[in-house]
Image (cartoon, rainbow, N blue to C red; front, side, top):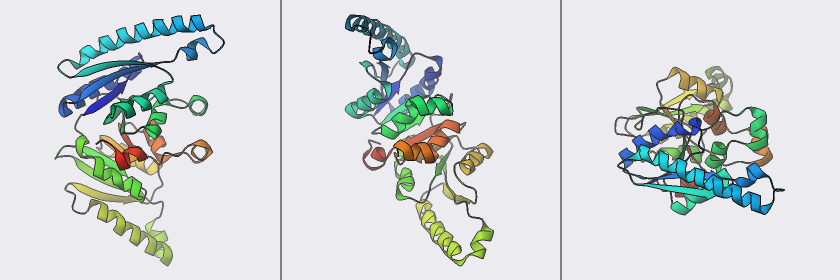
Length: 283
């Protein structure tokens, strides 16, 4: 198995290293330490070609030295160091695809709304574009989660996450499948159509956990993402696993993505399965 670990030289990105090391040891995985540099982002397109080339050379030298230092954190494991030139999001996606990686691990930044609208979050962009799962790490998380939360919206894509959890859990891991309907019991009783719909949905969701050891279903009358975040804070869940629909453009800007909201705001690590990994991932 292969873990791609993009680092940008900051203490924040380094938060992912201890967790990546623990997971790599558990999987006996190869770790690919990656640093993407983009000289044009520093120099600007109007800089002379010679100046840009010199900057690129200096940045590559510094990146190689930095990755050499980080590789010492993975003693006893197969490690490769990879420096690439180009924008981070596109470079990470391309390398994950080329290397047939099983997982990308990153520490997301908590950008404000305006900054995210202007430049976006690299981690969010990677999660939407990646050909494999993306684990967004907050700090010293467990390599083997004890209680995993899987929010579902009733779609086949969100439920398919359960079929891809094997490498990330241990036999003792409890899995809670959570659906936030936004429909109260009073509303179900008042409306025959609403009651019938909820009964049918409940039956479909119960089939997701049927026959799966240590899996259970929870249904809340609150709305996502607030219901998911509230449940997460009140429970002992130590990992959230979700799919993303990969939406982009104006629709995502206006409506937002529940997965994006959880990835930005959750206090626990979030494992994101993009559409590509849900149907043809390596895990």
